[in-house]
Length: 277
Image 1 (tube, one colour):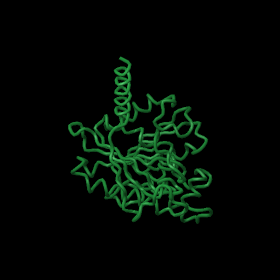
Image 2 (cartoon, one colour; image 1 turned 180 degrees about the vertical axis):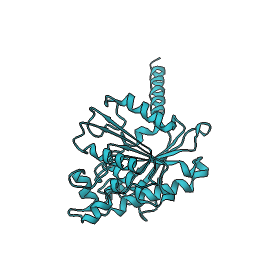
Image 3 (cartoon, helix red, strand yellow; image 1 turned 45 degrees about the vertical axis):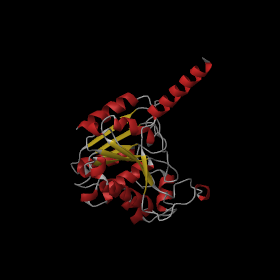
Image 4 (cartoon, one colour; image 1 turned 135 degrees about the horizontal axis):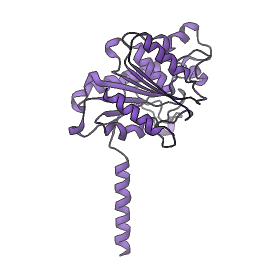
């Protein structure tokens, strides 16, 4: 009887673990030629970019996909609450989901951008196989990942831009009075020129082809000023681009997909409506 009890307990735990973790496939990107051995990689995998892909059940697939860029100040990646933990949410809507583990720039702004570009190309190459519409691939970014997402949405040629952008407490501007200092330093170096600062202040890059945006901040965010999102929303409005800007009274920075965020229910309801539009 004891052995039967242990066997049932093991089966229960195994089933619970399986149910909690959706199936995925990890795809290496071609932006690096050689993947370093784990014990030789001081950045713990961040020099070997990959796209982790989750696909919905075939009968539920809508043809849409979201590629998520976790934050971390362009120094590390918050892969779970700003990445992997979102898989169930999107899969439940029949939306394929990818989490990009992009490389850190260390002052070279071309590095993470190249990884985003490679991830979009990878998805488009597999679009038919994964039942993804190449014209329905959106981007999602949190904090510094939001800066990278908005950079991709505003710096690429119109034909290559994502279909939509979801930005969680994003760094938008590189203006020293507005930005997150660590993200600016890690992306652009210690003393970037005015030209470089303005080029990566994405509120200045919005145009008539910028994809629709969903932006959320907490008013008490002490890490990235909510004015980043407001400036971006204002630029979207000036260019007659669709934008939703949510500002909740509390929540701080980095709430992502965490139950501790007081307004998570309202946030998800708003995102649900927006995704249906």
